[in-house]
Image (cartoon, rainbow, N blue to C red; front, side, top):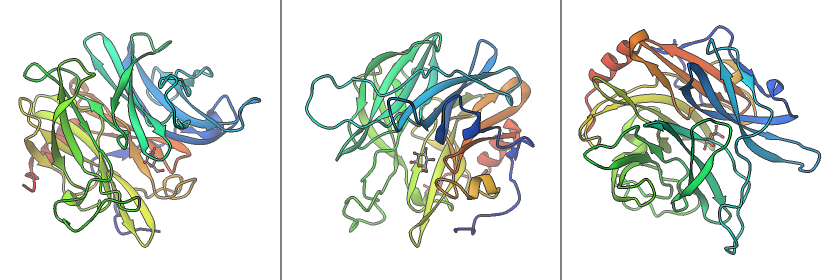
Length: 335
Ligand code: BMA
């Protein structure tokens, strides 16, 4: 078990009721609970929770369910999934798996856009974009990224006339290791920015951040939907440390320029949350705290992260937004 990052809490503090959601809270017999998309909707905290469960007709199925809460701690989970495997690929040949997890949600104007992975067997996941205004139904917009790319996260508004996204394609070799040839065992995964006039057609792709850019990641790094603050785009990230065949997933943060998000204003050189509690260190996949988003409220000076823990639970960590932003500003970007 990788323990090198353990230490006292830093900026983000766990809720005393953690884990606030577990497998047992699901309305179906569930054997895994993953990371959730998160947003405010009609004054409530809304989570999009992915779970693997058994049904009378399907031995193993995954779906994404809406859960809502008035107090941000006690959630009611809708037993009807908002997403299950669908036939977005039509009649095209190939094998498309059931991999309905890790949703990222961004509100743009009055519409909520959700991106989730669609697994293409043999090639890794591609990214599927949906939209909703009520979280009762979601309309498929398009497949917006080729495999292997499962995590595009949309900025909440256009910048200089274009939609922007931040994502993490896989099998990209790192410039620091030019001899590293991508293969199935080398998931050199970095973060990129892309731009689009309409959310469907994307281009002007540029790399932004590499796994080694932060101390707690040497394997993969990945994004969440950026949050607008007066100091810049707040970007909560995950980083994965790999050692002797084991992994440790931690959470970090950076700040991007409001006008030009390819400029990193600051990048925290350490984690803000790393697995320390038993529900984070033990489980279906051990040593995981993983974010698919965050909810920040400037007027309350608060940031909340609902994070997946060990692929069995959801935990809540809360911090002061101003403290997080000041800490990031004190860590200039490494390049
Ligand atoms: C990542 C995501 C997370 C998961 C983690 C560990 O790639 O799929 O949902 O928590 O792996 O399994």
